[in-house]
Amino acid sequence: MLTVALLGAGRIGAVHAASIIASERARLAWVYDTNTAVAAAIAARCEARVAPDVAAAITDRAVDAVVIAAPTATHVELITAAAQAGKAVLCEKPIDLDIERVDRCRAAIERTGVVVQIGFNRRYDPTHRAVRDAVRRGDIGALELLVITSRDVRPAPLSYLQVSGGIFRDMTIHDFDMARFVLGDDPIKELYAFGSVMVDPDIAAIGDVDTAMVVMKAGSGALVHINNSRRCSYGYDQRVEAFGAAGMVQSENLRSSAVVRHAASATDVKEPLLDFFIERYAQAYVAEFEEFIDVVAGNRPPQATFEDGRCALLLADAAWKALKSGRPVAVSYD
Image (cartoon, rainbow, N blue to C red; front, top):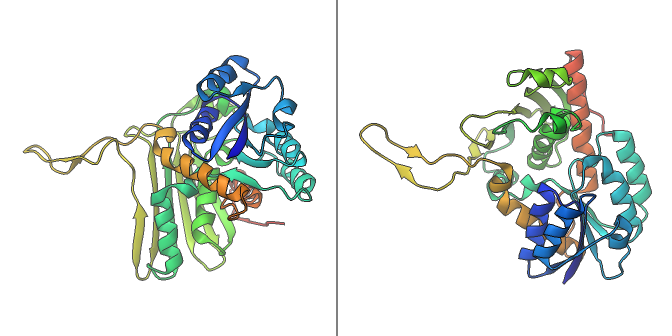
């Protein structure tokens, strides 16, 4: 039975809490949040205690692992404290918005031997994983083109976007990780980025874009295309397509149901897409936490490591540089 402390009780913290209490192999012992009311609400539902501070949660000898769902600016401090206390860590992405802070964190925890798993939950989605597995098996021949579509239903509040680090570090970072997940050992060497403000002019005022395309080239020559929008009128649009000489494999959108309707006025009318990432990736969050239990038990390494989080941020930084310079950017992982 894995005993867990949850740091952060907001929207994503509630998702992780649900995964913890749904598991027969884990229990939630502590919940901490600067907003004690939201921490108390989750603690009451999960038969856990509200921690008066972070130290109370991570220094409890009964705690085996820490799940970090607090704001991004706190991730490095919390990862470091938990790892140095000997607790395994599952931390939401990104590790931080500043690669120098990420590297200092890596140096601070590397000798602890503690497992740190990063919350790139889309790796655990069965449909996206099926694409990755088909590519690895060689079902489509050598991968030539990878197309990743990721479009939110609506922009996040401007107050969040102002501190999010921009679209590449906040939103596209999932797609950078998905590209690396499918490509495997084939590293991305170069990228180019386009961006526009097509959704909300206030996003331009904070120095960001809401519509973006990134084109990347891997060491093998395979090309990757990512397209993002902060707004999608028909639902939460999440697709991955891998193409090669022997064929194509694609993960389609999930819908509110699998019903297809036919009538005189129209045929093949499908139900609407899901509306939010929590519903779309509900199964993925559960699978992510169940793997974390196995990782802590020593049964397998994490699929999404600290290094994966670092590499995704390096790609996000390169995309921002490419957007600002109007030129392709070579990607270095040093």
